[in-house]
Image 1 (cartoon, rainbow, N blue to C red):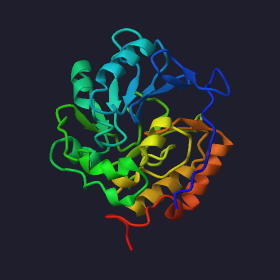
Image 2 (spheres, rainbow, N blue to C red):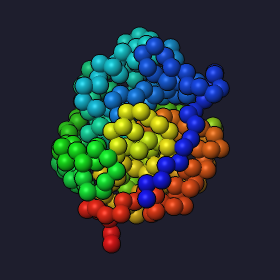
Image 3 (cartoon, rainbow, N blue to C red):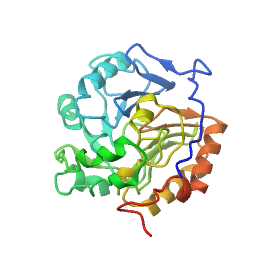
Image 4 (tube, rainbow, N blue to C red):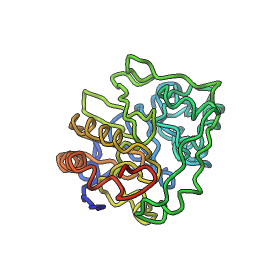
Length: 286
């Protein structure tokens, strides 16, 4: 049921065939996009190196305790104090907002998210409980320990614009990709077919601690233990596969590019119910 589709890591823009890794662990995958893996989750830096304060955007903020690593990486990449124009969230799960309040307050910047994520970011609503019965590995079994309570960043929270533009990221637009979370969004740039997918799909088997740690490149659906709406998750993957991206960076796993990646994403979309949806679980319709 959980077939693995092996892929090749993304080649960097400057060094085809391998990632370009900075000394601080940040991987540059385009002239103005880089990401860093912090524990089991990625944060994305959108902006050219050395562009200075206020000229870049942070996408997601990782696990609790990640703020210092993110600040250091930002100063190293962008110069100055490493302050962005804004923080944009793909969604509000704990592993994507763990350092959100600390960073937004320290930098004094706005936070943007889809309006359907607002209840989970203004303290008013908890996410549905995780589902440890989906199987797949130790992370899934440990998922009842993961926090689902909302955080409250309402003072800085803004809704993404209905015109689909992304603040501080000219040329990009957001795409509503629900399923993993009601207001989950992915970010897309037409000019080079670059996709920041969040957790709409991931490139590692996130249910397994071993896979999450080793980051062996594989195409998978959203993390099973935290996905409450599988029909919408399937529709989101189909929509993203239809874009035929050239490069993707996801919330978990290595960035990927090229034809092999597209074939794997198309296969995931075509066989989603077979290879992504768990055979049983709290949110699986029978």
